[in-house]
Length: 298
Image 1 (cartoon, rainbow, N blue to C red):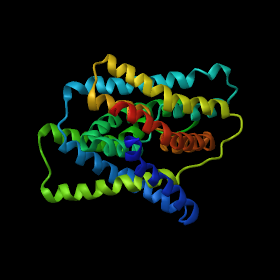
Image 2: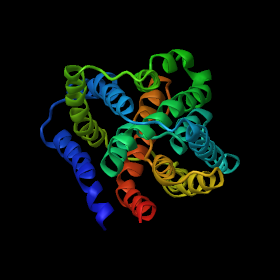
Image 3: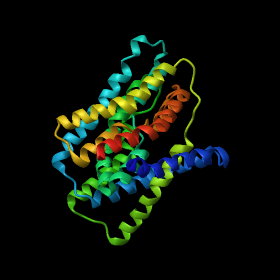
């Protein structure tokens, strides 16, 4: 119960974003601007600020990243499992397939920070920084025959990767920014969580396309229930414990990323069904994430 209450403010911000989108009529251009601000400026600042201030256990980094990668690979396999029984067009299947393993970075960093503070953000930042290229490579590859998006360009321009790498290099060098710079990064970090979660809520869509209901529900189950169990088993097998095990299981239990919708639309896929899956996993995670968090920290 205590853990669920800790996460309540984050989920309240998501619901606030949905309410603002519905009742304030600010327009798509406004919300697109908020998402760009958070994605390209505020979240990289959050990652740099947290990673530079946290002592990183490099010995645990390999099993930590291996566990996160294994959980994502399990999501890919489970998402592909029903394919022989589905009668979906290839492009529609490729659009939905990515929802079985992609993750919402906004919620990842917000939950890690709320539960574990700066060390949690730093640990989650390492996992996210390593997992984003894998997620983009597989997703774009699945849709590549139907679009003109360069997978390497998508990876190279990702600000979360650059934020993680920058913080990691500064941490290894033992360099802390001067106090005014730290204060500046801290202000940006404070703004990132609230605006990021409000943007997640504003993007919620609850209307699914016909013909994909069964597969969509399967993907919700895979993403929120199966992958955390995979991460828990793999992490235990690899000798993870404490903060690292807790954070990697939370990572595996995250809802699907909103970038899955952007990629599907950009490459001519089924954006409507992907938007529903993002919304369904986000809303359902309001129940499942507190469960996993409470179990892990008990």
